[in-house]
Image (tube, rainbow, N blue to C red; front, side):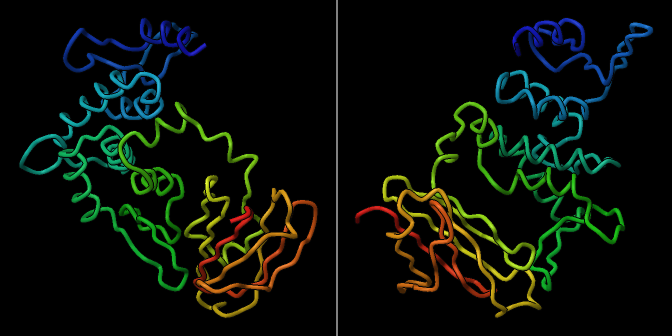
Length: 262
């Protein structure tokens, strides 16, 4: 299905010569008057994000178009300013995904200096303000730029090319009292048959208060072994088929759940 779509899109909505940058890319198509409204390199960034898992070389060329236009790929000089912070967010994500180190380093320095990275220490929350002057950080922009913080080159593409479908049948943590409690890690090691879960006090005002969470999809929950902060921990119970409930406190804790024989 994708190849059928791409064959049509490549003919109608993109002018890509054999080498060099695209000549134009569709911003939108109006079927009533059969007109393609052509967009800027910024539009190429939107398309590149979705193309990179299946057409990485096309995505790289679209990114390169923007990188040269906005002077991210230059070895010196100032980055070209833009009004829409989505350009910086998507540029940083794609530079990271494609391993474009020069563009990534220049963009990283620029967004650190101009896009208002900020810690809310009371809420233990990191966000970007993007110079918008809004009391609540913009969710879509923060959600986009977060992708550049959570994986290295190729991480976005691997979600689609090599998805981890086994996780849907493996032990998992749920029922976390968010936003009072946050998780900084929840990782299942299939070889060792253990689940590592790290909590933190997302709401510092509730630090030390009682809380709980559940671990489910366990083959034999009654035989689970729980370690908290390096010591055996007993404040848990079987709470349903294949499930245990863990009592804890609102704090930074390191849990290890073992389900195998070793």
